[in-house]
Structure formats: C-alpha cells, structure tokens
Length: 143
Image (cartoon, rainbow, N blue to C red; front, top):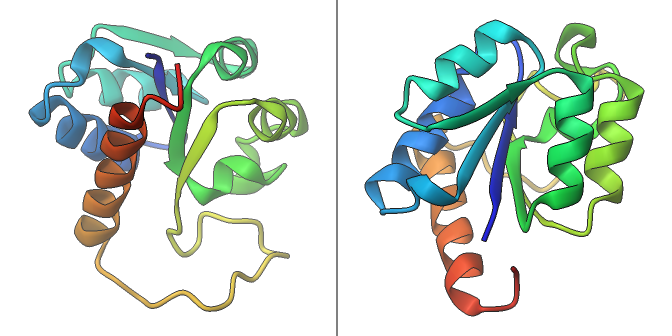
C-alpha cells in the first residue's frame, strides 16, 4: 500500500494529514511530495521518513501510488499561485490511484467553482480525508 500526500506552498495541509494518518498507524505507507522544498520539509516534520520534491517527484510517485491525497488544487494546472505545473496536474489526474481531495477554499484554480460543498473547518475536512484513506486502505480494493 502506497499513500502519497502532495502539497505545495508551506505544506501545512499535507503535514496535518500526515500527522493524522501517522496517529492511525499508517506512517510506513506514506510518502510526502512537495511542489517545493519547504513543503516537503514541513510535511516530513510529521514524522514521515519518505519524501521527495518537484515536478518529476510528483509524476513518478503519482504513477506508483495506490492512494493520492492533498488539497483539491493539486488537480488544477497553475493552482497554488502557479506551483502546480500542467505536468503535475496531468500526472495526478491520469494516475490510477484513488484520490482523496480536500476542498480547501483558495487552493483550487481561480477559474473553477465547486458547488454543493458545505463550509467546514479545516480540522474537520482533514479528519474526513483521513477516514476516507483509512477506509480505502482497509477495503482491499487498492494496492
């Protein structure tokens, strides 16, 4: 089972998700991938041993993941103030991995509007994401 958490900018959302999954005993299955070195470093501070940085790391790890997780912006080219390159978004979108996306406002493309979402605190969204990842990992349908 390979869980890949992708985040950019400061990596704070990825770090919090990694911490929640580590608390659930899933640390050995996690690889964190940052769009920049600061994001990767911050996510690894959650106690995750495996991490990588940059466009190629996103592409490579997306191909080898069973579950991809991160803010919804990772699916949109040029999101996160341009940190998500078109190649990164394509690699994530084309990955056969199950995707668990956190609908954080301001992270998606300025040109995309996701309707039907109820505003929730980030801590609640992260807990729901961790629950989804845990269910997917336990289901035996991935990996």
